[in-house]
Image 1 (cartoon, rainbow, N blue to C red):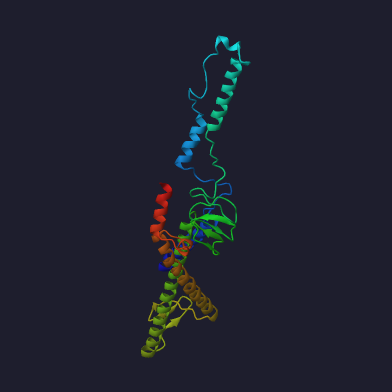
Image 2 (spheres, one colour):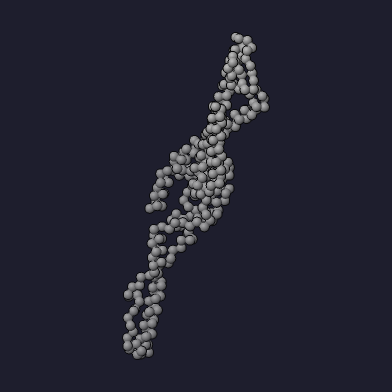
Length: 283
């Protein structure tokens, strides 16, 4: 009964590790689209709304008074109608020159507030985005490029990556605990077997199901050299991947608590500087 429960538990943990691995590998890590554009600031939005509403014409800029009845008379060789037409043309030109130019939200300027261009992919680069030289794209909140999942670890799949290393570490620790428990039972069974033979004679029976001592069946031990090699390989694999994923979990714990990726820490960023920059950009 315990063997079946251990089998179901280990298979369940292994399935969760495989599913987390697939999600981390197939989920978009937060790649910036090539046609991504920055979000307009409050001043730019106000200017854009003003330009869409159109200019407000002042009375002194355009002469809307009707022409005088004597506009056809000539005074000094210049007619009044020509003077009125010239004044209206100058007023229209002045109004056109005073119109605010429509801001261009499509082309971000490198000198604008919070607007950066990636030097490698020549596209908009948001804050806390970094260019991956392997994926050839910019990733938002990129932590690192993981060869295990053949993908970058960013804002989109960081959770699945953490679940993947967690379930992998749990499966390695679980299998290692089962091996240690089996080894302890086998050593204890053989010790009791030899003690029983020494005191009561050879009354124990060894079968494929286990060792029977005094009518009581004990645990089964594998003495086949081929099976021992498999067990040794399982011990090495469980220790290797278990220690590696445990170190990864300890390292990622600091990433989760500080909200700083590895690249942010390599650049010398701190939590206080990140908070100040966020408040400045949002304000």
